Length: 286
Image: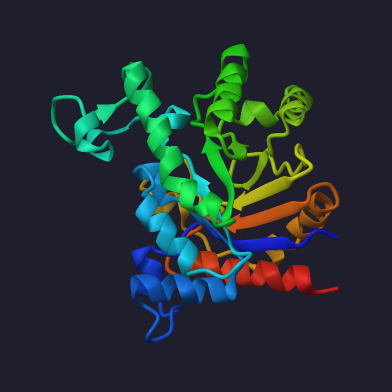
């Protein structure tokens, strides 16, 4: 059966760094990644959602991790239709105005979007060249509803990404009883993995739509999901009992896809890595 790779959606968060999970001597930038990679085989880079990836950083990440370690990279906000602050753009691409102004990708010049795609590619290329890149995660916003326009947008992202992509929906209609079959058929025809999610208000769908990769992201079960600060929305300590129902689902995915990634995005402190450790233990049990 396919190995199920378990990890977290970041190794750099300040709360994780100060939680005590990293041992003394492993708390610098390099030490944290080396320690993380000694404990887990996969990680998601979420910083690339907030700013374009850096080829320099990608080369360092590849050099500091062992052969076989995998990075999934979250696509920059502008590429998935999310508004973002102007300061997230390189200075030469910023429009005039305050750095904290919110920009919408649909209002950017086409040439600017083309350049963002090019820089995203360049930023993750060292990971791909080193054999460390798993996929690029395209997490679409809550207002991204099913329809012809949305499907065309996904097809465009697949064509422009130049690397394997995965798709996560935040609008529940994609996974509703009435829509799910169409969603699965559409993604399967394109061999795009549907990212399963564990999150309040979202159906717990775990279906393989690519023979190459399946992904599940665990966002926690905070009652503040959809409201409050980011920390409030994702603050959750998973228990083994909450994770056990996902074990047969992940194993089923492993029978249909060559690779399976289970990634924890809950916070805070060391909550994500502790949940990942628990999930790995559950999967190892027979």
